[in-house]
Amino acid sequence: MDTLISVLLYFIQIILPFLGVLIIYYCYKSLFGGISPERPLIALVNCMTGEKIPITYWENSIGRDRHCDVVVDSPTASRDHAVLFRRDEGWIVADTNSKGGIFLNGKKVEESAKVELNDVIQIGGIDFELNKSEILPEKNRFINMFKSHNICYPAHTMLFLVNFFQLLSFIEVSFSSGKFDIKPMIVFVSLIACSWTLFFITTFLFKRINFEIEALGIFFSGIGIASLCGVDVDKAYVQLVAFAIGMVFFEFIILFLKNPDIAMKFRPYVACFAIILLLVNLVFGKVKNGSQNWIVVGPFSIQPSEFVKVAFIFFGTSTLRGIQTAKNLTGFILFSTICMGALFAMGDFGTACIFFVTFVLISFMRSGSIRTVFLTCSAAVLGLFLILKFKPYIVTRFSAWRHVWEHVNDIGYQQTRVLTYASSGGLIGLGIGKGCLKYVFAAPSDLVFGMLCEEWGLVMSIALLIGIAFLGIYARRVSARSRSAFYAIASCCSAGMIIFQMMMNVFGVIDIFPLTGVTLPFISLGGSSMISAWGLLAFIKVSDERTYGLKR
Image (tube, rainbow, N blue to C red):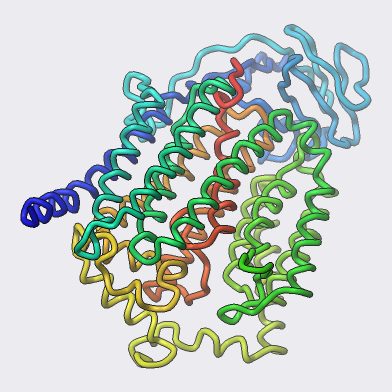
């Protein structure tokens, strides 16, 4: 009997990495297969030259600046003159505080006006007629590899495949001690219940046709929860609860953003809530691992900065009309300065770096200006210089960076153990729960990538990173079909935040970046991190026009 169990466990150990790769492939194949072709929705015809300009986005900036979606070659046109966008009631043109204003069929538009086919819009003295569009060929060959025959796999099929992977994972971890332990299987059953509850809510209650993003989130989260079972089952139960709360948070954000015009009105309240959270953290926060970024309430601990990530994305991208106006960008700069200043005061430099990179992404996507990015980075470098000048002790926190093998028994202890144990996992790993790294401090949280390499193997670990990184490719692809620039920017920047956080964790563990203590999204121990990751995933979900069942 023992021999049979050993053979079974070895078979599971071999098949898991390849099954994980298959899940990631099919999920993304289905995602890209369901994306609408990049065909123009309408076209603007220059009445003077006859040039037909295809309109492929739901929201389009119009102006003299070359970063605009529709460039108006006229000295009387403002750099950012107008926005042409689509809503449920039809196409609308809005003035973005231009000098010369806009005219619709010869009448000046004060703020915005609905545009019908064959209407004439005058911008910068040039007349544009709204016409039907013409079909353009697909250009992206890379994405087309995933879109062969426009395959979209049934949601229940993908979920069954993910659940089968999880079943094998929890069977393996149940025998990690040499004897069968029922507790991990209880966690597995609870995980399955949560997953299928989300499936029925999504499919039958909200009648959405796309479930791939949820399947990927369940897949990523399940790996983290299974790994925790090999460390401490009680912590796995807590992470499971956070997983369930994260899915509720995920659905709440999707419902909240169903009408972006209404959601935008909550922008000041969200910003105030985020700032209050950070101030409470500064006053009442407890220091853990050198950072004052925890609020402890009885047996529970909360990391407010994780929830501020979601608020940061929402506030930074919640501009629908006047997409590139300086007023809104100035407000966002002020909000970002407060957030990053508070994080520096807490000593949470890793999260501050994540916020800064996200700020650069949002600023660039909203302004389209390299100059803005350059000035932002220059200001950041100056700020960092001043911080290090007045607080030189900060440098000592990262003194082991690139020198961990010189400090094996002191400040380099964690990373040297990670590098040693991670390399012992080989291609398929030692088995879930059978590694030695789990006994090192912060292994399930900050050092979890090392645990993945040791217990799951290099193949599964690299596949997992690729699966998370592909969220960025997907977000960029669907943003072109999004109903609003808000969705497009929010999804791309959320994916960027997740990917950069992943890089900070992985590169910190292997000593390419300084070890800053940021978590690996979906995988690391931490309820706040799990909930935040699902919140960011919701922004990616809403960018897909299929989510709200709207036709082009």
